[in-house]
Length: 92
Image (cartoon, rainbow, N blue to C red; front, side, top):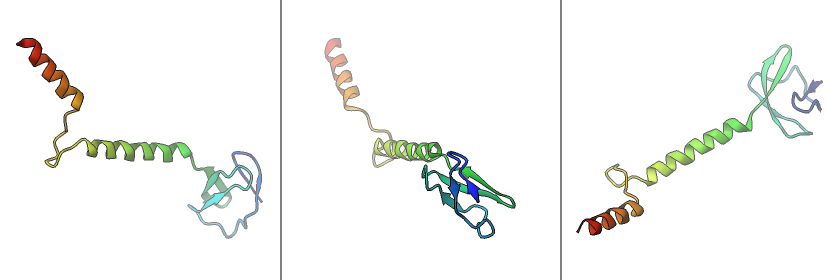
């Protein structure tokens, strides 16, 4: 019988049939667990933080792409253009 490293709940799995790298789910806390070794079986929780960081990196890459024009140059913000127009008016 295996135990969840997060909440210590029993996980009903045949220890002879699990494979290294296999992902299991705790029935109590629903934590995803990776089988890190098979003899003896060791479980490591899969961190949600890693997935969240990957999602944030993908989103920031998408945002950067949106700020590029057809030639791959960064687009200017409308605010920057307005500030430049105001500066020109003040100089006159």
